[in-house]
Amino acid sequence: MLGLPIIVPGILASFTCGGTAAIFGNATGGLSGAIIASFVNGLLLYFLPALVLPLFSYLGATGVTCWPDAQSSA
Image (cartoon, rainbow, N blue to C red):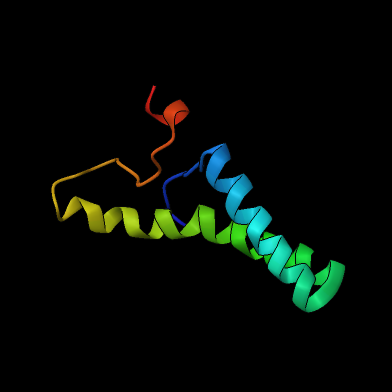
């Protein structure tokens, strides 16, 4: 629909970044802040690499992402 590649972040990035966003969201906005912060963080984890991926092709690296998880490199 948008023409973006499908990016699946690793579990480590999703858990640690989403958990940290929820902690800071809870501290500033309570339960709703935690839910909104972790949701926005999840969207950023999926869409920012997809938007940056075409820029990597100018460097000669096509079809690669910047997620260094062991399960995604196997």
